[in-house]
Image (cartoon, rainbow, N blue to C red):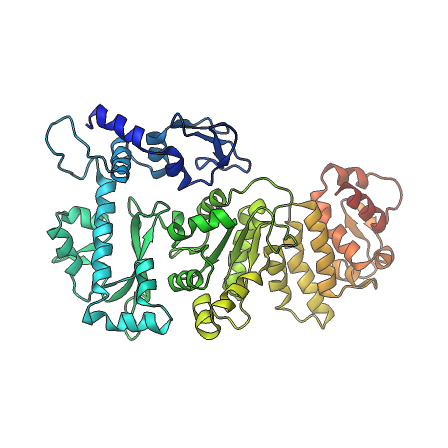
Length: 512
């Protein structure tokens, strides 16, 4: 057990605003008060407050609160002892334990810190190996992609030797047990004992938001070796959860918070290329799709709030409320990723953009081919996520034929109908009609209902003749917006006599 005097010293020496600020974008909220989005529950308006003078934090949304030690416990899923040890290491305080004498670390209660220490030693080992003769192919790979030695050092790039147990032996010599090495995901158990997980690969350290290395991403250098995966990451461990980390976040977090902008790229070299090119807010997922946990991390750094104008691009070229820009391709995988982001969080989606390089080059290749300015231009060319999803569908049909336009309409209708913001939904309905070339000629009525038959929408019968007199975008709007009208739709359905589509649309627009 750690001595009480040492715990008090750690608490007194640690600046709560700095520790919390590594996870939450804090803004002034009055005398001796800072606020931001709570990292412990999902919210859109800041209710998380920090008071530096008393070293306390409290969230008025979820009711959680405490001091700096409890915050570190909660945010890093640590025990009390591990949290104190982590803070003590940051402020340079030597801890003493009640048993007396210098504490000898064992797996518990400092297991997490031991795993972090193992990764720190492994990172140093890999970086040193990059300068070895064996790593010539790795240095060539990096140089061919335009990365200098200084750039590689900035990102901590290293090399894992071909040896089966070079790292394992090194870690043992530094006092780590086989159980700790295996628990860290740095080695695996074989018939003859432990063997290194990473061999003959370029190594990228994956760090958490505090800058501590929690895992590695590795690329195979010998492309003739088809038996091993091209990319290999650290397995899930007590400190590494791939759904909760973003590569480059430790280097990008200040720029993200300052510029309220984040660029999501696909690979480690893409992150490097973007930063070198002057896009310091680029990050990448680590062997998994961008998911809900990543959304929470990004939203906390952006300081995302419930702003109805979020995502509106101002005259300055910046978007209100911050921007999240994806650089995935416009292919099927890119469309799938866009749809996933679309369904994650619509308030988040309204601030989400997509930047697609027409020739299909990723940021690393783009920088090599056209220079740093081309990477910046790619980011600036972003279009709203909603537009990208709709256009991705339209681009795969033949709009020269009626059948193609009808097919595009039917595929795009659920996307537009799924936009929760009524004003945005109405505007994208107009845009969709324009992109499809719909004209007031009865085309849509023929597409949405059999010829000569009445179309029933919400209990109201509309004849093809009436639909034909309605402008194309109005019919699309009526068809898309009706399922979301709720009580208004039910009242309209009970109106006596015939109700023309134009009448319904007028009422709908007034309500929106």
